[in-house]
Every structure is written in C-alpha cells, then in structure tokens.
Amino acid sequence: MPSKLVPLGFEVGGRLARTRAQKGEVVKADQLLGQLDPEIADAQVAQAEAAVAAAEAQANIAADVADRNQKLQTEGSVSDVQSKSASANRSRRRRSCWRRRRSCRRRRRRASGTTSRLRSAAPWSTRRIRSAGWSAPAPRSTS
Image (spheres, rainbow, N blue to C red):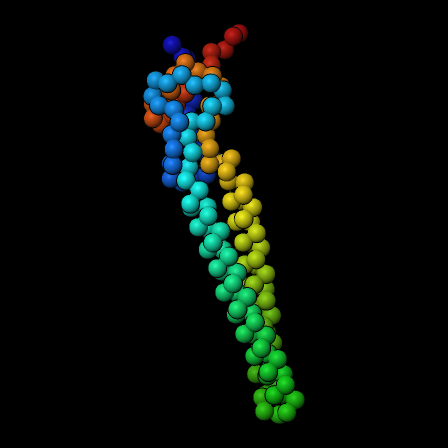
C-alpha cells in the first residue's frame, strides 16, 4: 500500500480535452495522462491580435487628425490648443498601440509554449491511477 498520494495537474487552467489513463490503470513514468483543449489559448491570441488592429486604427486616425490640425494651424484655422491636443492624442494612441503589440507578443509566446503546459504526464511509474482526479501513489522511499 502506498504511503501517500500525489495530486497531478496542469500548469494552466482550461477544459480537459482528453484523458489517457483511467482509474486502476497501470502507468509508466512520463506517460501522457491528460490534455487540455488549446481553444482558450488560441482565442486569447486572436483577441489580442484584434486589440492590436483596433489600436493601430485609432493611432492612424489620431495621426491624421494631428497632421491636419498642424497644417490648419499654420493657416490660422485651428487654435494652438486644438493642435497641441491633437498631438498629445496622437502620442497617447501610439503608446497604446505599442502596449497592445507587447501584450499580443506575450500572448503568442504563452500560446506557443502552452502545448507542453496543456499536457499532464505521470511523474514516475506506478501500479495504478487512484481516481479520475489523477492522484497517483507516491513511490516508496528506499531508505
């Protein structure tokens, strides 16, 4: 009889897509026990990409307004305050765009490294899986 149970799990949360070991089954070290559905990570990347596209569109609009206001200011049609306000808005939108791109890169990196984090494998060989919750008996100490 094992002295204790070791709970197994995943590095990230998600929806279980496959189980590869059942209660009472004999498993070997590094045998795949279960896998999460990558759909959530993929959706997060798509959401981040959409946010980048929206931020880029807003930055382009702000740049056009700032350029137009600067030209109109030289003609005397727009006040100095309006021109400076448009320039400040352009700067804010550029920073927002930069932050969204950085966030998107992080999500892509996480998603590309998620494959291994979506898998759970047996840490050692054991006679059987105790339950569907994947508690595996710990190996007995030899000392």
